[in-house]
Length: 380
Image (cartoon, rainbow, N blue to C red):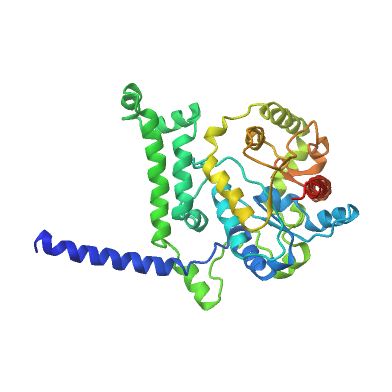
C-alpha cells in the first residue's frame, strides 16, 4: 500500500483512538489512595453546608480539626462551618487539581479557601511510583502544562546534577563540557512527565477503577487512611494521628519521643532555613496567579497556610513579600509559635499530635477571625 493511501487510514485510526480515549477518560474515578476519592465524594454531597474548606496534604489532615476551629471562632462571634480536605501524599500540582474539583461543585456557602500550597517542584522524589493511579490521574494536560513551566524555571541543585550524572555516566560529562547539561536535565525531566501525561490520556492501568465505578464497587485494595462516611460526618475530614496510625507511624512516634535532641536540631534547621528566601521567579507565578483568580471567581477568599513542619518552608513568605500572595498565615516559625515545636505537640517530626492539632486549630481560628474582621472593616 502506498504512503498516500495509508496516511488517511492512519489519520482515521488516530482520530478514533483519540475519541475513544477521551470518552474512557471521563469514566476514570478519582483515586482511592489515602482517602482522596472518599473525601471528594463526601464534599460533593455536603459542599453547600460549608463556609470554609482547607485543602492540603497530610499535614492539613493531621492538624486541622474543624470542630475546634469552629468552637474558637464562635468565641470570636463568628459562626462558620469548615471541612478538612487534607489528603496524605498530596503535593502542589495534585493539590491544584483537588482545589479545582472543590470549586467545580460550586458550593453555595463557600467564602474561604484555606490552602497549604507549596513550591511547584517538578522533580520526582526517590520513592515516587510514577505508575500509581494518583500520579497518572493528576497529570492532566493542564497540570502537565504547569509542570513543564516549572521545569523551565526550576533551579538545578548540585544534588540534582550529581544524581542525573550518575544515571547517565556516558553522556553527562560530554554534555557538561559542551554547556548542554542543564538543557538535557530539563528535557529528560519533561520527557518523563509527558510520558505520564500520555498514560493519563490513554487511561493507562485504569481498567479496574473504571469497572468498579461502573459497577458501583471498590475493586482496589489500597484504602489506606480512607475514612468512612460516618467518620467524615463526625470529624469532617479530621482524625488525630494517634487514632489512625499504623505500625510504621507508631515507630516514627517512638523515635521522636526517644530522641528529643534530634528534634531540637530539626527545629534549629527550620529556624535557619526560613531565612533563605528563594527567588520567586522560580516558583511558577502563572500557576499561582491562576489559583487565586479561580478562587476569586468562585466568590471566595484564598488564604495560604504554612503549617508547623520538620523542614523550613520559606517559599510562601517570599511570595507574600513580593506581592504575589494577599493573605498568608505562617505557623512554621519556631520563635512566634513555639508551642508547635515541642515533642509533646507532635506525633512524628512532621505532623502534629491530636493535642497539637486542637491547639493549632484554635490558633488558626484566632488568626482567621482577625483577618476576617480586617477585611470586613475594609468592605471586602
